Image (cartoon, rainbow, N blue to C red):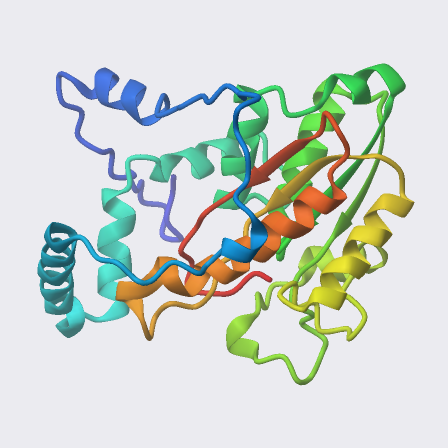
Length: 280
């Protein structure tokens, strides 16, 4: 790599320990498989969320200690801290390498995350391969990297499949939506707007029941929905010690919407991410 002055600039390479191969193997093989049992039954819906709050003392202690140490970072500038965390990320070179070798459309960390899922698991159902038709639904999708990642994979491995897709996110063009809650990057959305559904009130808020049902109906009208993805999160900067509590209602709405839309034999991928921005 060269600077404007023509001097060679070498990229910092992470140091490799003797057991780096084992570490990489562990990172990419944290997989758990659950086999369905006919004995599994959902509890009665009247009992959902009715149990009284409970705590585990040792976890509360660990939480307090963790938050104490995290508070020591308040004196660092966000730019300095972000630079440090990027350098400590063992996968930081992956996107750069992919961009140099392939330069795919709309490459982001989400693109690589989803492409890894596509390459590792059989996410394109057998029915889609047989009928040569597939509809996918993408919840909380902005800015759209899951879709471009899936498109790249489909063009390489399933070009004969007639693929239709529908996506949902908070509507960046709806004036009453807070800019702080939305993804501002609309480069992909702007050119594919007819494939996006923002619900009956045009907000795109998936936590609105009518919006959820509208999205389900629109997706089913396109054909059998054989793939659903959900990658939503909510801004937790004001409550960093309660990320799961803040994001769980959105994850619940994602799951309910996805299971209503998904056809039998289809695939559902949900990412439980704690992001700084809501993708709903």
